[in-house]
Image (cartoon, rainbow, N blue to C red):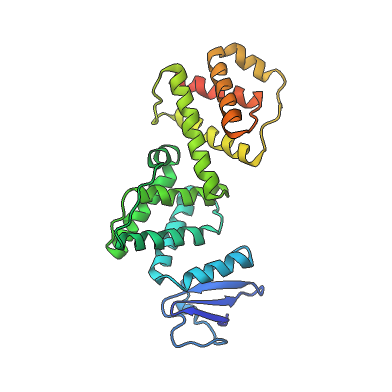
Amino acid sequence: MRIEKIINNNIVSSTDENGREVVVMGRGLGFKMKEGMEIPENKVEKIFRLDNEDMLNRFKTLLSKLPPEHLQISTEIINYAKKVLKKPLNQNIYITLTDHINFAIERFHENMLFPTPLIREVRSFYREEYLIGEYGIALIEQRLGIRLPVDEAASMALHVVNAEYNTAMRDTINITQLIQQVAGIVTEYFHISLDERSLNYERFITHLKFLAQRIYSKELLDSTAPGFSQMVSEMYPAEYICGQKIQYFIKETYGHEVTNEEVAYLAVHIRRMRMT
């Protein structure tokens, strides 16, 4: 590969074997180099291939303004997230998480740190992603000697969730709030506390995540099993009524329809939690 453009001493842009523009990172990769020169393979640490030109240009603009170690830290967190979650992440995370980490470090130095309102919900609903955020905090402390507040673990987790489910930050926050509100309806209706350590609670939260995503993508379940909703309403009448309350709440608050099939599945999960 040859250098197309030098972004800074450690990052250059090039084209791969398919003629696709890529961003190449390596310590000293751009130092005393010129456009058109061959990139030394032994210095290449990471090659970034982003999905579209706009995203690539945004990434290059971001990289030109931040210390290379911030990108290195972000990349290691993303690699760790892929390993833990065992699933692909939207490549936009290289922009969003890197930018967030850089801004969080700047705010730390300026003593302008802000709390994350949804930290408890993120810790409860996105456990693996939250632990990835904690890994990020520890890595930043190890590399830069900066101890960011625990709130940043939740913020990093939300960026991972965005990339995991291919949603925008605003939608991720709305989904998290919706899950919180629905869980609150269940606890209030049955006057119980949900055991966040139980497997059935985890299954319930997982179901709510996908329900919320289906709501925002307008892909709700069809009635694939005739009579299923009626059967569940007869077997678990209290849980089904609670599901209907959730159905009404979502319609009134978010303006989204929830099918009776969805209500039935909610009732089944609520029943399992109550029997834990």
